[in-house]
Each structure stands twice: as C-alpha cells, then as structure tokens.
Image (cartoon, rainbow, N blue to C red; front, side, top):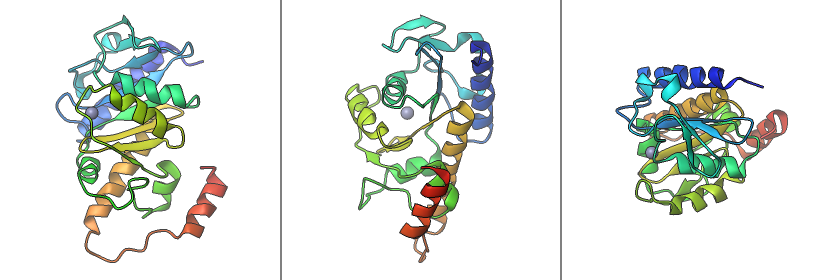
Length: 212
Ligand SMILES: [Zn+2]
C-alpha cells in the first residue's frame, strides 16, 4: 500500500513537471489519485499545477464530499466518474494542453476514435480516443458521458476542452497523457501530407503482445 503522504508528494512533483513543460498553464488542469478506501486526492480549485502544496491538496470521498484540504477542482466530478467505471484506475490526468485541445476543436469523421495510430506508443499507451460532446465547464451532465466512455477507454477527449487520461498509477497516466499530446503534435506536423498510420494487423499485434 502506498502511503497517502507519498501520493501527495507525487501529485506535487508531476504537477510541477507538467507545468514546467508547458502542458499546464494558469490554473487549468487537474490531477487525482485514488486511495485504498476509494476516496481520492485531487488538485484544488483555482490552483496552479506548478505551485501545489501537499497538505492543501483536496481529499474527496467517492461521493464527492470534501474530507480535508482546500475545495477541490470543479472538474473533480469527472475524475470520480472515471474511477467508478474503471476499478483498475488509480490516477486521472486532465489538462488543457495545446495540441490535444486543438484536436478537440476539429470536426472529426469518426468521433469513436479521433487519434490516428501514427506510432506504436500511441496505440500502447493511449489506445482508441473517443471524442465526447461539448459541455460547459462544471456541467454535471458530462459525468454520464465520461462514465460511459470510461468503460472501454483509458483516454477520452472532451470537445473544445481537452483529454482525460487514466492509469494504474499517476506516472502511467501522466506518461500516457504526454504520449497523447505528442501524437496530437505529430498529427498537426504531418497535416496535409500523406501519412502511413499503423495497419489494423499491426495494431492487433500490439494489443495481443501488450494487452490492450
Ligand atoms: Zn478542463
């Protein structure tokens, strides 16, 4: 069992890293981890991921009630929706990083999967990326959409907003998020050129070998 204090430290360290890399700006974005008892630690509302303090991180029950720390992010409810559907998820990362948000503002032919399988790591770490409809920030109707998408996806993209990515640890969720942002960047770099995404057979092989 990982101590709560250790997890608080991890949230601070990964928050600082994501902020310094420019993947989080202002007070946008939030990180959470699930504790053994089902409650979560989540970054507070209006906090900058670059300047988090371990003891001020919000602790919230699985029903969304604040147990300790500062008031939680207004987006904590969709973190709880992911945890509810994915028993294996121990961490959730949600940021407004530039290239992923740009992807979320495009018209997509197939909202069931909007990330082209350009690299093996995109397939292994992110998998299929469904586009969820737009909701105004804080609209609880988003929770039902997230819950439904989380059944079969570790990552999803909120239209005109940004991605939600889960993992079995905070490190895994952050690395998957970074992979998603990089593939979104590659998508725009190769825009207008004829690309050669991985074939269905290559994707099936990755899923068979790496268990997606
Ligand atoms: Zn957001």
